[in-house]
Image 1: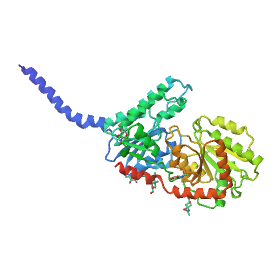
Image 2: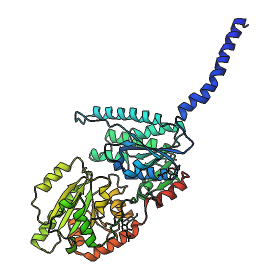
Image 3: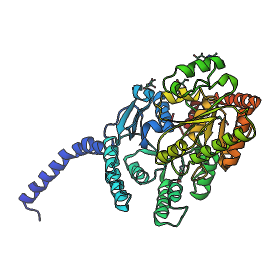
Image 4: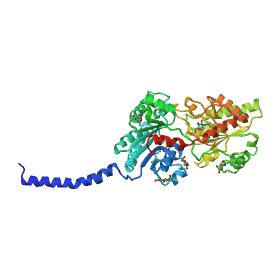
Length: 451
Ligand SMILES: *[C@@H]1O[C@H](CO)[C@@H](O)[C@H](O)[C@H]1NC(C)=O
Ligand SMILES: *[C@@H]1O[C@H](CO)[C@@H](O)[C@H](O)[C@H]1NC(C)=O
Ligand SMILES: *[C@@H]1O[C@H](CO)[C@@H](O)[C@H](O)[C@H]1NC(C)=O
Ligand SMILES: *[C@@H]1O[C@H](CO)[C@@H](O)[C@H](O)[C@H]1NC(C)=O
Ligand SMILES: *[C@@H]1O[C@H](CO)[C@@H](O)[C@H](O)[C@H]1NC(C)=O
C-alpha cells in the first residue's frame, strides 16, 4: 500500500521528469549530437599535415565549397596556406597544434606522448565541430585519426576515407621492410579493422583500389578512383622562347641563379624537381647522374647543353645533399636549392624544360603529386619508374622513365640533345594537361551522391 506521502513523492518526481524531458530532448541531446549544425551541408576535412603542402585535400576543400558546402578544414598551419583557400568564404581553417619535439628524442615515450596529445586535440576539435554531415580524412596517417573518425560516426557523421597510400607500408619502410615488427603489425591491424567502417572510399590509383578490394575486402562497386589532377594554378607557358628568357631574367626568385652565359635559346636546359628530402626519395641519384653527364661532356661530347637543376623543398637529408653538391667542382651543371612559396612554385615550373621525379612509392600504389604539377605546367617528366607509374607516365610518350643513376644519365642525354623528342613529349603533355581536377572530382562525387 502506498501512503499519501509516497504518492505525492512520486508525483513530484514525475513532474520533474516531465519538465526536464523537453529540456533533454530539445537542448541537451541536440547539443551533444548536432553541436553547431546549420541548414547548409557541412564537411570536416581533416589533414594531419601541413595544409599548404596537402594540395589534394585543398582541392577537395575548394570543390566542396564551390558546391555549396561549409568546409571545416583542419590541419597544421606553420607554412603559408594557398590564397584561394584563405579567401574562400565557405572554408574555415582550424589549426591543429603541433606537438614539439623539444628534446630531440626519438624514443618510444615521445611517440606515445605525441599520439596521446594528438588524440586529445583531435577529440577536442571534432567535438567542437560536431553536427557535420561528412568527415573526410586522408589515410595515411592512420593513427590516431582513423579510429577516432570511426567512433565519430556515432554522431551521425558519414566517414569518407581518401586513400593516398597505406600507412603501414610507410612505417614498414622505417623498419627495414620488416612487416613483423610489432609497430608495423599494429598499424596494419588498425588500418585493416577501422577502414571497414568507412561510408565511402576514394583511392588515388586503380592499383590502390585493386589492392584494397583484394586485401581489405572493400566493395569494388563502392570504391572510387579519383586521380589527382594538376590544379588550375599550374599552366603551361604559352609564349615564345624569347619571352620565356626575358621572364626568367626578371623573376626575383630565380634571376640570381642564372649565369650570364646560360642561354636557353641555344639549347641550355632548366630542370626542376621538388622533394621532401626523405630516404624514399633519393636525390643522390640525380646528383650522381649529373656528375656522369659532366664526365660525358669532358670525355666524349663537348657539345652538350648546360643544365641548371632546381631542387625545391626541405627535409631531413637536405644538409647532407647540399654538402655533397658543394663538394663537387661543377663545370656544365649547376644545382640550386630553393624553398618557394605556394605562389612562386607554379611560376618556376612553367619556366623550366623538364621535371624530374625521384619519388619511390612505399606501397607501390600511389602516384607522385609533383608529376601532376609538372604535367599541368606542360613539362615532360623524367621519372623514377615503379609499376603503378604506368597509370600516369608512358615512356617516350609523355615522359621518360629510368630505374637507376645510369639510366637517368642516358635519359638526360636524350632529353638534352634531341629537340624533336622534347617537342613531341611536350605536345602530348599539353594535350593531357587540359584534364583537370574538376573533371574527375565531380563525376566521382555525383556517383557517391555527395553533390
Ligand atoms: C573548377 O573549375 C572552375 C571553373 O570552371 C574553377 O574556377 C575552379 O577553380 C576549379 N576548381 C578547382 C578545385 O580546381
Ligand atoms: C560558397 O557557397 C555558396 C553556396 O552556399 C556558393 O554559391 C559560393 O559560390 C561558394 N563560394 C565559393 C568561393 O565557392
Ligand atoms: C569502404 O571500405 C570498407 C572496407 O574497408 C567497407 O566496409 C565499406 O563498406 C566501404 N564503403 C563502401 C561505400 O563501399
Ligand atoms: C597565355 O598565358 C597567359 C597567362 O597565363 C594568358 O593570359 C593568355 O591568355 C595565354 N594566351 C594564350 C594564347 O593561350
Ligand atoms: C598528365 O596528366 C594526365 C591526366 O591528367 C595523364 O593522363 C598524363 O599521362 C599525364 N602526363 C604526364 C607526363 O604526367
